Image (tube, rainbow, N blue to C red; front, side):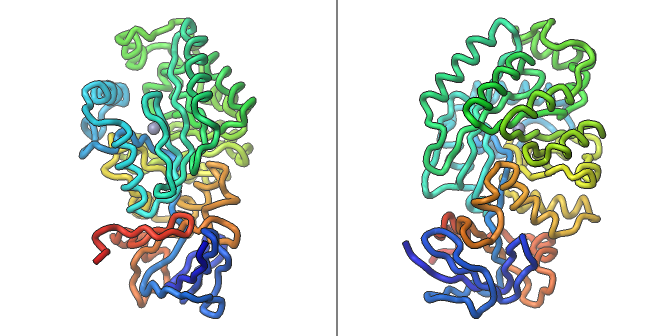
Length: 411
Ligand SMILES: [Zn+2]
């Protein structure tokens, strides 16, 4: 495979300081070296006034909703009501889920995202090729009543049997959906399965007040939703349950991604921090804002040492799938955050959350040449702050060393 060099106004290795007039040498789809102009090997492509950085890592998506042109419902609506809209949308959708997933992968790539943590439902098989970002395809599992546990696990095993654990550029994971849709004993069975097969897990947790109410009191809007759908099991959740109980179950998995965690308490944040090698949090800033949740405990998590990676969630609660826009939103909302920390959250921390930090997430020799380039001000001395305060979308993205350029730049 080919060997070439890329030169840019700025190169952001992430693991070390930005390099002015930096060069990245790519060979066989992997990064060979990163440094100044002197390391260049022919052919050399000078990208001009751009920041060249690792491809972005979006750790939480549901690409089956990528065909939506606008979010479902209104900003600030209660989560249980929004879920009713999601269920209705799934039912009436005339869009082939595979096409929506493909559109979501294309949108991701166009926005410089080269890796995804994707929640896949039973009807959607994995779309994977050299053309698209790599992904962990977490297989979503739902089953709230004890009576359904055996059949749900049986169906899942069938699904896993049909899909090899690793298909090209995708790996399989498990996603027990959320405490209000997964019986605690089903969760334990899934953790056992994940441990036996060494699969990573992802679960929505501590997302809404209504979820905490259900766990604490076994009542409230989520109970009504489950009763409406004949899914309710009055014995599933012991009163006084907390997200911590779910964290303790997930801690047995080889790797766990806690999705949202909007309402995690200090003790739960400490619990995650003490297990940071295997447990991470997926923060979805614009989706968090869409539901008008209370202030996100980001500072507390970062101060405690929790690994906080970034996700867009789906187009059902977010206007697009651009992780760069998610990072920019974060920069505007959390002005005390260091821009380099936001860059890290969107790249290397995301890679760590998915367990792929040896392969992607920074510019280091040996890692895949998953790269993206964003236009920058030629005078800029602060490239990271510059792209986070800008509006430009990535102009070029490389997947495993192969260039993908949005059509509007081709002529
Ligand atoms: Zn989600």
